Length: 335
Length: 135
Figure 1 (cartoon, rainbow over the protein chains, first blue to last red):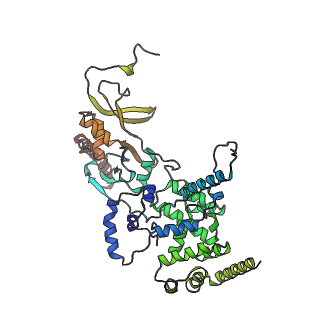
Figure 2: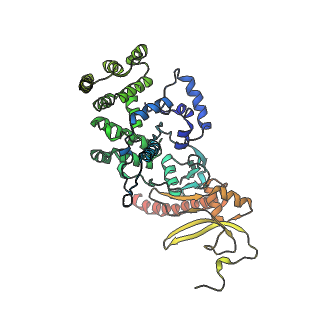
Figure 3: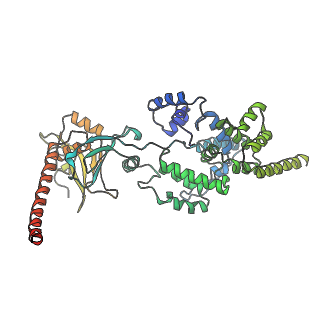
């Protein structure tokens, strides 16, 4: 259930649209109209304001992790003497910068393969041994609308496939951090090695730099990473990074939220747990706990308890974690 | 060595703008730049604007990569530039212009030559097989 369809793009806030450089609305308007007619209640998409605020709250804002030193040229540290007011000002500015660093990368459906023949010239058969790839190098065209055509040795003039397109655009308009041929790191057998070293965040950053958000490789690498994190319960690796929202969306769409819930309760993040369950109810409004919650208008720990009774697989663990949390709360309030 | 007056600063009398290939690269490794230049300039000399490139050797994926700045190409064609024959053929292959008639003629000639080569092979082959098979 990779959720975002073309409908969601129509409701994007302008900030996100400009950042993700998504294709213009006119191409998607046709799909939007058709889809709205089919689905009776509109399914919440990744880009809805409500969903984004929930995911952003869950991501957390650990300034130390966001501004962790990145490998750069070695310079001696720079010390400043500041008053309390100046320190507050600097912290506020740092929080603003951190918010821009935590903007979530887009979650899109896999792109349709291109299969369009422009001309067939049987006369040319047998003259050439290799195919010609022609790229339009006009500077002011967005990359999605660029003409890239291939003349095959059998004379057929067709549009280039997505892989050929990405390679040609990287050759003529190189982007930083992207290679013409994708690194072997992204093959399935090599991903396991990196996951053992707990470097999920680095893999995801490299993946964002290398692939387009709707390419099958991007989606495959992201899903592999999320599966591995969920298997070993390493949720904290992605907390306070921009990938946390995407991971939560993936888990909630596939109803695998138990491990994450346990992790949140163990770290005393009750608000995050309630936002997780709210998001679950938004995405799956037909489930039993959603109906009960709407009737009773439950909040906080009651919401979690109702959810645990009806929807979760690992009830026992979550009950234990909740008990431990409540005991800790009781002792801390008593002392 | 600085010859009297730099060749780059020369002004030419007459001549017209052509869009043609300028050869670059090294020994056994050609590389063409598609270039708009005065027709009287040296092949690899000073040009007005580079409009693209062509790599005649196939790369690791078996493709010959060519880039064409169609916007600027249209501008120069609108200014009255002429095309060299290889440039016309390349644009015909790309689909920007219709297929050049010499491309078609060349393809047919190649096909006819291959047929002729196959027939003499077939004829001696038949000739040598017959005495063997004939009783």
